Image 1 (cartoon, helix red, strand yellow):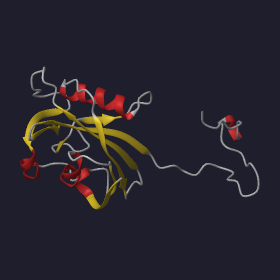
Image 2 (spheres, one colour):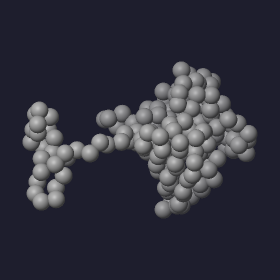
Image 3 (tube, helix red, strand yellow):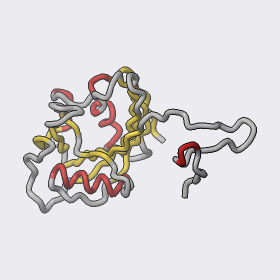
Amino acid sequence: MGASFPPGPGGRGEPQAAGPGSPTRWEALRPIYLRTLCFIRDGDRVLLVRRRKPPNEGLYNAPGGKIEPHEDPYEAVLREVHEESGLRIRGPQLRAVITVITQTTGAQWLLFVFVAEHPSDPPDPVATDEGDLQWVPLKEISTLPVVSDIPLMLPYLFVRGGVLMGKIHCDNDDADSMLAYEFRIT
C-alpha cells in the first residue's frame, strides 16, 4: 500500500511537513502514460495497424494501447491485441521497455513492448475501429509510413537475450517528432 497523508488545507489529503527539510506541498507532476505494443509475427511478417485516430493517425504501428488502472502490462496487451485485431494471442514475451519524453509538454509515455506468434486457428484480421490491419514483411516495414521508433526497435525485438531498454525524446506527442534516442540491452 502507498503512504496516506492526513488531510491538508481544504481536506484534500495533501502531504504535510514531516520534519526539517521535508517538502510542505506537492510539486506539479507531469503525466505518465502507460501503454503496450505487441508485434505479432507470422514467419517473416508482422501484423501492423494503420491508425485511424490520433495520436499517430495514418501511421502504421503494432497493436496495443493504454493500460487500464486494474491491469498489469501483460493483461493489457492481451486485451488490447484482441480489441484491435480480434486475435487471442498466447504467451506474449516482454522484449522492450521504452520511455518516450515529450519536450513541449513534459509528458512521459512508458511503453511495454511485447512480441507474440500469430495464433494458428483464427482467420487473418482485416480492419477494426482502430484502423486497417496488414501483414507486412519485416524487410518492407521501412518503406511504409510507420511510427518513427519501429525501425529502431525491430532489430532487437525478435532476437533472444535481454530486454531492450531505452529513452526517446520527442518534440511533442506525435510519434514523428523524434529528436533523439538511447537504447541498451539489459
